Image 1 (tube, chains in turn brown, red, cyan, yellow):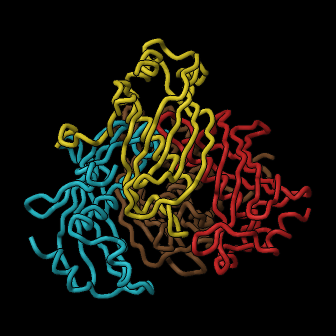
Image 2 (spheres, rainbow over the protein chains, first blue to last red):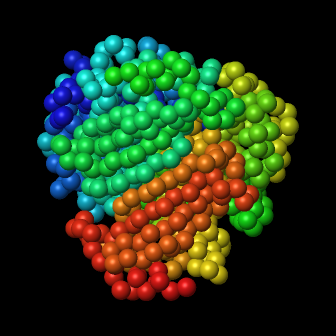
Image 3 (tube, rainbow over the protein chains, first blue to last red):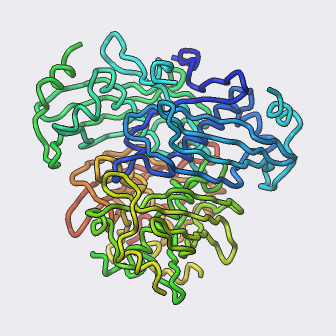
Length: 145
Length: 145
Length: 145
Length: 145
């Protein structure tokens, strides 16, 4: 069974250029308080960013020769908790593309109810771990609609 | 966007009664050695068991009044590593249904190559944390083909 | 072997009322990029908050009859990465105590170098999941020096 | 604050050559069932193996030029659950040293009650990902008492 058999696995790019993926809540995502552990939303947002890049044709392997994206800062609001068995949509949209960083807005939504949202700044870092300007071909992808 | 928009999210029951789901490898699953962290496969196998139960109509919520499944023992072989961006199939099949436990065979497979396999025994425990006989309606589901 | 044999396990309260704990970086904290996965710092900060409460005599069990703390929002800066085998200090200090929430400043530091810092707002929620005023005895603990 | 200020952070080597470390149970280790998530014990056992190697003078950095240890197989019994706030001892002892692998017995124990135990086989793999014979200086360390 290959990736072609799972057409939805990387989520979808919406007409407005934003990305939506979906996450199922499993045991691993929850804690003894009965709801989802707060750091799990960061894992989900990272999956959203990876799949969004993937659908734009940017793979970790492609980038590896030049560098990689890393989260530089994040402001996150935990509004309502997700629970075991929930299906949650994870939305990712570009807010601003700067010389060496990209600002994203990400949200976790269940049945049209906003659960968690984050303002995320990712930077491009070289293989030596230094912040660098975005390569032009990536920059072009993030600014096109 | 609701669960109906993601038909594949819980994987599929095969004609022989086994379950197959798929897992994408993200940053969260890997470690600094460059490949998937060994405990990540246990998280994936748990997703497989949850989705298999889900497709048989057994939800965590349904069971909660009577008890829940817990892993009692596991023998696991790590044969080949999965890597970032891989799509891995997770297969789950019943080996044996006993009075108070179920033995499962689970495997993580990439492009027909077996990466990890596990022999898993799950037991039914009451809400008081005591092992108990499987409720008859669950037992019936596991033994039908 | 009991808890008494590990005097340092919950870290220490400093003379100024702040808390410091230490974290060792293991495989589980890293990802394939070679450094610590960004969400791992949130796990470490949660350990810091739990141990700080513990040393002030507030256990999860004590609170459970009245409610629990939950993270309401967090602004986090990832300045430099921690690496495998590092020992990192996690500092937690109270910035402000309001009626129903507490603002904390948390930092991950390695050899006097600030790696990650966060401004964290935690709220008190009842067992029914509703935000509530801080019980007076907790409020008193957070405001004393 | 440096590592020297936390003398207990890597646990201890017992007179019989076994290693004991301690783990505090935090939110991150638990799931919505109210107890510790089963895969968390694997993370704890990995911490035990890393600290045991560390106290024997084998660092990940030292080994990196030659290779690294990887778990090849594991048989694990989940006997009783650990709970939030528990302090758990993690014991690691060598059972057998073979040409290219080491068999270990690991246990998670709370107040003299065995919670989880595992028979673990770790292999030495080169930087190219191939199983290899144990370097002589490592072999010597594992066989001395």
